[in-house]
Structure formats: C-alpha cells, structure tokens
Amino acid sequence: MTTEPLSAEDAKLVMLARGARGRVGVARGAAVRDETGRTYSAADVTLPSLEISALQLAVAQAVAAGARGAEAAVVVGDEPADDDGRRALADLGGPRVIVHLCAPDGTVVSTLTAGA
Image (tube, one colour):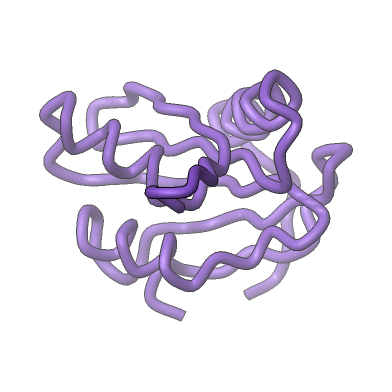
C-alpha cells in the first residue's frame, strides 16, 4: 500500500501513539480510532507475568470501552511491526482497517491493512 499524506484524524493518532511511547519510555506506542471516532492510546507493557504490545492494549481498551469496530491505527517505534497487534485489530475492525507504521519521530514508514 502506498504512503500518502495523513488525514488530520490519522495525524492525531500519530501524536497520541508518540505520547504514549514517550511517557513510558518503551519500544512502541500505538493508537486506535474506533467506529465512532473515539481514540485509545497505549504503550508496550512488559512485566514478569504479562507481555502485551501497544497495539494489542489499545485494541483491548477500545473493546473494554464498548467499541464495535475500528477505523484506523498507528504504531510508532524503532521497529513498529506488530503482527499479533494487527491480528487483534482485524478481529475488532476487519482485515481492511488501515495501519500506519511510523518511526519514533512520527514519520510514516509504511501503511498497510490489519489483515496484510
């Protein structure tokens, strides 16, 4: 999928994901926009008894808040790829949900779908 300029809504997701990553100082931050436009952001969590990616956690927050679908997501980090997170996003919103993978500065590295 080609990378085009981000919409204002997707640029907001980048800002939220960067903020989540920066607050915690972890490898990745993510943000998800649900079918109503609500947003959820999260950072990677690594504990002795729990490991969950930023995108998985953002999807879980959306589901816990009652989301029934997803419109888009962003993952920010040095290595933003997250296959498990994309599968969780596809479970919520379907395989065609757009996912922007971004460098730490917010530059879009690639854009793909949750089912790719």
